[in-house]
Image 1 (tube, rainbow, N blue to C red):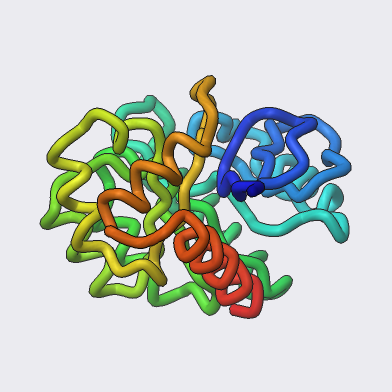
Image 2 (cartoon, one colour):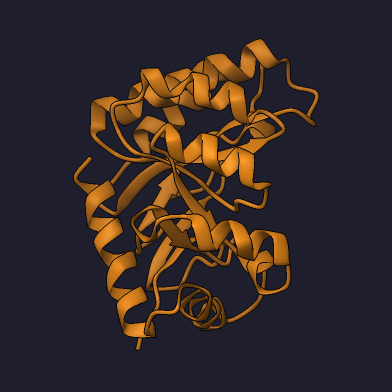
Length: 208
């Protein structure tokens, strides 16, 4: 059985969404393209947006990573400006958004009102109350390697509806099948059921 990797950094991986790094050219496989908060060049935003727009091909599945990061030196106002611009591109092209968020979850939730397409928080690894607020606002959550060993996160996953879940390797080096096995065990469903649900979720966000 093949397992879809929602967010990864391995360019030649056929089944999943490759995160295209800023300044690079698109992959032959499904990819997402965005301006990560850490890559924002305050004096070059127009050119960065032009790069994003000009590298959207038929293999582009989503806009991202984009979002807000509370631990970097880029001014919050500028981060918000670039984030909102990418939400507008997502609306225009009818593509979901893959969100990077560090210590800015409630700010990200406040941006949901601008988005017409689904928003997915990638690499979710926070407490139950944040998960609850995100789910209440119709976000999807993508979980990674931390679920394999973090008991608190396992409990979060147990309460997250199956139709709001994605699974990813991100930039970790491990076999995503391990993650699918763990989630099927936590959710008490078969591997086949889980795999089918993830693919259904993909179709849902693809169609807005």
